[in-house]
Amino acid sequence: MKKSALSDPFEKARLEKGYGKMNDQDDPVTMILGLKEVRKCAHNWKTFQSGATPGRIVVPSEVNIRDTRQIPFEVDPPEHKGYRDLVEPWFKRPLEADYQRKLRQQMDEIVDEVLKKDTVEVVSDFSLRLQSRALTLLLNIPYEESEVWIGWGTHVFRSEDTALDGDKANILYDYIDEQISKAIETPGEDLYSMLLASEIDGRKLSREEVKGVMILTFAGGRDTVINAVTNSIAYFAEHPESLAQLKEHPEITGRAVEELIRYFAPLTHMGRVATKDTEVCAHAVKADSRISLCWASANRDTRAFENPNEIMLDRKLNPHVSFGFSTHNCLGATHARQIMHTLLISLAEKVKSIDIIDYKENIEELGEFKRKVGYDHISVKFHA
Ligand code: EMZ
Image (cartoon, rainbow, N blue to C red; front, side, top):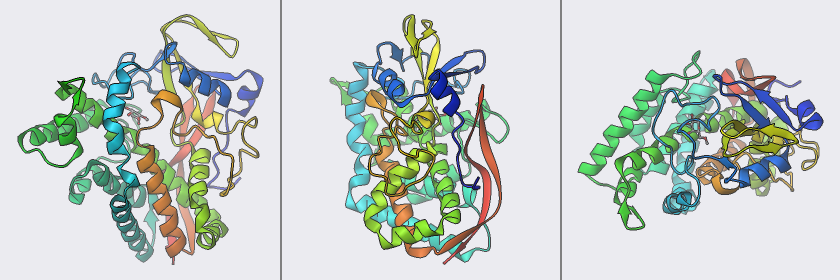
């Protein structure tokens, strides 16, 4: 198997029973594996809620390291709609020409930078930097602030060897608190200020609600974007012909972005909590127990995808669920897609080939399954 490949550990269980099991801090999870069932459960917010105890729908559960409800992600309808409608236009700004121009500038700069280096550790020297710099556009704050975030490493709640790191989480919470205070004192054109000034049904958002949106903005698109970018570099290292294909046919870039995101499924799954005794895949699910919607498995479902374990950059039918599905589909998807799109354009234009020198895979332990989600580190040499 190629070094850049991400295999599908769920295939057998998906075909045989449609679900899998994992324990997580003594709060077990029934993982839903097929595309159709994943979509059905994702759509059914009444039975499978997101608004449980903050942190509980995340796997691994974050109930022990945070109390703040992330918004809109941990709120169910009907309240969900007010929040979502409020933030949606802001998170669609990546569609604006000026945003795209700035992102392109950031991208070209970092690609030029790595082309000059001897070897590059992609996770920290490329993906993390890129993710943090691009986030300044999403928050609409000065570029220099990205230096602070780069210092936090790839995950704000996890460190190299601890699945959940409360101390690390506190760095983020304190930081956000401080930024909110600053925005209250001197409002600007940034996301904090926009949230502080906005109202839902004639009521101003509370400080805790603003914090909830900001934590999600920082945490949700961090390791996910980093994995998507890092996996893309590994893929292109082993498939220089794909770089050539993109260069020759830039019109397929949009499809290529979707295909890479399908295949990588940077977020393996997301949980829900059952509000009543129910059943999925002919398997009993008790009230107040957890299921997860396994996007990574659903994306390899042969009932929906031809040759799902292959990357076909110009794949036409691609109903992947890497950004979730229904009510809670990813708020940051427009930004993430734009990053990937710009990455492919810039790489195709500037990079001829990439050599992998050394790497360590990041393997998630999910009960009966083990899934590669990306790399802890991967050193490469870029060639112009
Ligand atoms: C949560 C989650 C959101 C969680 C779309 O995913 O991302 C995870 O990385 C965070 O740890 O808190 O934001």
